[in-house]
Length: 337
Image (cartoon, rainbow, N blue to C red; front, top):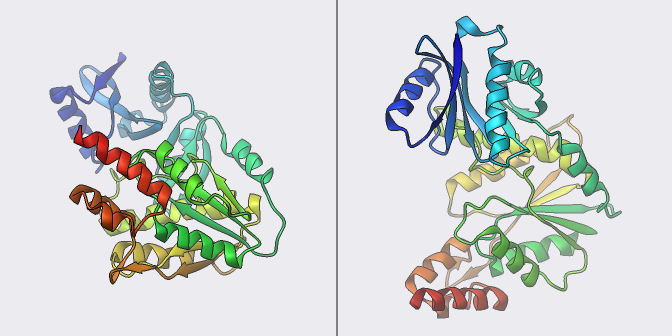
């Protein structure tokens, strides 16, 4: 008889058994999984799946039980746990060879990267989101786009957006929604709106689950760190190019030049290849905007955060617009109390 149980990530001994089971499939246990649903027969683990926020991951089924409806039963249990926690809209990362299995469980394929990883969702909200974007479409020959985190919003970000708007008929700016930054999403969005007030040919889009966060990206079945970065970029950009950009008629995507960080520089280069693939429509041209400097160093959000740690308001005043400076001063005052 097959039984199902819920195992919290805090259950050290039971979690160790799950890790051993996942290792049989060359999978690693993700650190962000809050709880696992485990299927057992005669005290032996035969399947498991984890829940991390809105994402289902770490899913594995003993080969002897594949094709015996265990996947459907496991997913039903996982969905029940997620729904009980108030999470109705879920995403699932899997290997492309298992897409059909999860389609039978009610999930819909969105996109994939190479032949390594596929993204699926259960509530099929992508089309309504695309429809909402179509309603914001503005006519023009050159339509630009930016995807920003702004942790926090700096004069460098302001320069990037103004440069894009100066060369485009219209620009769409997407804000990363994931709260994995020093400044929470609500604060980042407010500072972006204040800092860009007055720019006429710009639409600021609130955060979306379809601007994929690296915090949710699975690393548990990819061991090569460089490959993880590459696949994340490809998955994110395929979703942007094939689903989001066409709704708004986007022709260009703007990024800041990266003179210091090798990883970000490589990301920009891969972005150029992914968005402007020959024979793949729509083709989007990637434009790198040169950074602006203060005191011979690039203005960056990380430099602002370092200055905050040092309490250097004088330096910060040269790196951010007045609205961001005011917010930072309030934060530092609260920390002093």
